[in-house]
Image (cartoon, rainbow, N blue to C red):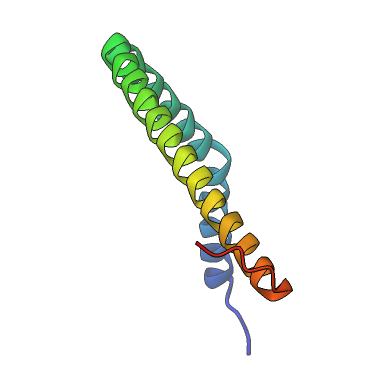
Length: 95
């Protein structure tokens, strides 16, 4: 199989444009995206901060409730374990 000069030059041209895209255009696109994201954040400013603060407060409240529930479940499980241990020892400990 012989490759012609034309097919080699087309492949070389294709590789050149791929390298050009990777080396130049990709970083430019990334930088423009970052600038756009940062500019969008500055516009939202205080409204976004207020929303974020409210969400954090809601999460904190939910976590506090969850902590109380977990403590209650731990107490229930420890009581059941203690009752089973009493029954297995034969001390009763029933209600």
